[in-house]
Structure formats: structure tokens, C-alpha cells
Image (cartoon, rainbow, N blue to C red):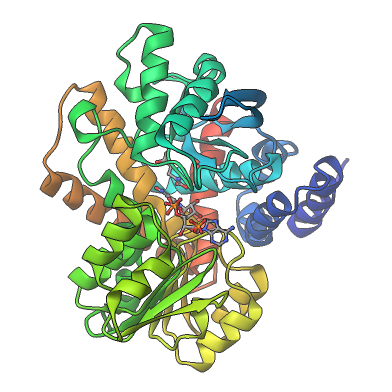
Length: 452
Ligand code: NDP
Ligand code: 2IT
């Protein structure tokens, strides 16, 4: 008779095995550890989940594509970038997840993002699997024509791996409406198909959903509000620190303002702005969305209420709520200690894995409501799934209808995470709640579909 090792021993062994077989991918290790660290109770309670092979399969992408992306700049010089698409898990639906264009992109980064996406997408309840892709291409300082040629070259390989029923990319860092337009155009040209559902985040006139640009930021603020309501508070009158100044940060700030909160900061990789009067949304959109400028331009034009802190971190600005909305590992243990010392009540992750594990534990020990990205930033991919539904039905919903759906989905995700955490003996721990609830949905489908 064989005896099954206890759940924690099994998870620890798997952890070691994943490090060994995926060397030099620290972000992927971090994302996997953070999930495995919370699964022991559910594996112990549901022996079918502890069957050899299930968690192992979940940690191994179904398919990984790496390709060359050659393109010419405006002076005719040839550049060679690397393209990635990691199709991680399709037990719940077509692979779904964004494309990131940033010089830091490598296979480990794409795998961490794809792994997170599996659980996040499961939490939306909308029938989407997990995937992610991108390139080490840096769009900063490139002309529209250069970005177009890059996107066309990228799609000239990617098109053979994607499709409305197979894999549906969208935006992420460095990929917004402009890039999705160029990518969609090239897909249509190569395939000779009007296949609207192959990409999400499209323009409103050609198959894009209302509220998709706003969805991630709005959703992250709704999640913060739901966590505060659990404690008998809301966002009205609360001060907020927001990092980043891209898609997620801008619409986080918009929703904070709409709910009566006071967002004091935003940032980019050069530094941050603190604005004593609260961020001026119109000026921020003008500088970042229209002019594609830097956050220092905002400070120069805003007048005396704002100052630019070169190289600084927004977390040193005292506030009631923190919404990291730039990139991974942007909030460390020292930052968390500063925020706690300054009385922060809630942290909602608009970005993917922005908080290092030690900082997460510090928040939790201090009793701060902490909403992990898998739950808090799921509004973006949720509205992407609504965009796919509209494309399939050849229809377009009103902004009011999409916003109502988004609010319902974020409310459901909050409730699911909250109740799951309680069920597994970790009340108030949204990390455990999100990981276990997402895991249960994917694991049940994988078990039903056999060893594939
Ligand atoms: P954008 O490209 O629109 O904006 C990114 C912002 O983050 C910019 O202000 C950028 O500054 C800053 N940033 C990026 N990389 C770094 C870095 N290495 N160090 C410091 N600052 C950095 O991207 P999004 O707003 O779409 O994405 C932000 C985060 O949200 C990412 O973690 C993404 O994965 C996540 N996310 C996005 C969703 C979406 O729908 N777009 C959905 C869910 C999560 P700079 O210009 O100086 O580089
Ligand atoms: O991290 C994310 O969830 C995204 N970048 C959005 C993915 C999507 O398919 O809309």
C-alpha cells in the first residue's frame, strides 16, 4: 500500500521541482510559490485535488511559442526583437490574456503573467482560459509608423497561433488601442477573415466594447470599495496613492474621483507626482493619452499644487488607500512598512503582482485589507470576455450595461474570495480566497476533462 504524502510536503516538493526545471525565471517562481503557499488546506480537504499530476499540470504551460520579430525603423535600420505567447491553460475556455511590449519582457515574465491569468480568469466566471504574450520591444520614443511595422511583423507570426475559439490576446503594458488596431489590421489581412473576437480592446467603431479601456482601473477601485464596506467604511473622502500613469492608473484615478475619494499621486519609471489638490484628470489624460508624454510634464503644467519627485516612490505619501497600478514588484517591504505607519487601510492591486510577498504578509499582519491582483484587477479581462460575447452576437452593448455588468462581476469576485477565505479558515485573507476559489474552478474542469 502506498501512502500519500501530506499536502504541504507534496507542494514543497513541487515547488523545488519547478525551480529546478525553470531556471532563471524568478518572477514565475514567485507567482507559483504565492499560489502553492495557499493551497494546502484545499488539497487536504478535497483528496481528488491531491492526485499526482493535477497541480503539476497546472504549473506547466500547455504550449509556449517564441519567435523572431524583425522590423525596420524610420531610418531603415533593422531591429530584431523576440516575441512570446504562452498558452497556459484552456480548461475553462480559449486562452485569454494580454500582450506586453516592454524591454524587460522575457519568458519568465510572460509565464508569471500567464499563470496569474489562469486564476484571475477563472474568478470572473466567464469561461476563459489563461495565456499571456508580448515582446521585449520598447515602444517609448518610437513613431506611429515604427510601432505599426513592429505590430505587423509580430502578427505575421502570431496569427497562426490565435483565433476567436483558440487564443484571444489583448493589451497590457505598452499595448493599448493603437497597437491593437495595427495587430487586428494585419490579422485581417493575412487571414482574409473579419474575426472580431480574435483580439479584445478594439476601437469602439470596429468591434470594441464600451468601458474596456476603463475596466481594469474601475474594477480595482470597486474592489477597494467592497473591501472597505466589509469594514463599515467606503471611499468617500478617503485619500489615495496611485502608482503608474498608464491605462490602469488613469481609470483608477477617474473612478476614485467619481466615488468622492482624493487621488494624490501618479508615477512613471522616472519618478512620481504628488498633487495636494488631487490629480487633475483632464490634464493627466492630455499629457499621457493624447501627447504620450512624461509625468514630469504634468507637474510642470499643473502649477503650485503639484511637485515632481524624480526617482521617488509614491508609497512615501501618506494616504488611506493604496492602488499599485504600474508593474510587478514595485511595492517592497519598506514601502509597506511606510504605508502601515501612515495608517493605510486598504491596498488594491491594479497591476499584476506589484507587491512583494514580504510586503503582502506585512499588510496582512497589520490588519490592512489587501486585494491581490488576480481578484482586484480582473475587471479588465472580464470586460474583454464581454467584448468577445458582443462580437459573437454581432452586437454592441451600451456603456451603462457594460458598467453594470462590471460592477456585478467585481462584487461577485469580492464575495467569492471573502467566502472562500472563511470556508478555509482564513477570514479576511483575500489572497487565500482568490487562489483557492480560482484553483477550484480550474481543477474541477481539468479533472473532468481527463489527463491531457
Ligand atoms: P501602460 O503601458 O498603459 O502603463 C504602464 C505604466 O506603468 C506607465 O506609467 C509606466 O511608466 C509604468 N511602468 C511600466 N513598467 C515599469 C517599470 N518597470 N518600472 C516603473 N514603472 C513602470 O500599462 P497598463 O496600465 O495597461 O498596465 C499596468 C499594470 O496593470 C501592469 O502590471 C499590467 O500587467 C496590469 N494590468 C493591466 C490590464 C489592462 O487591461 N491593461 C489588466 C490587468 C492588469 P513608463 O512609461 O515610464 O514605463
Ligand atoms: O492582466 C490582464 O488581465 C490584462 N492585461 C488584460 C487581459 C485581457 O485579455 O483583457
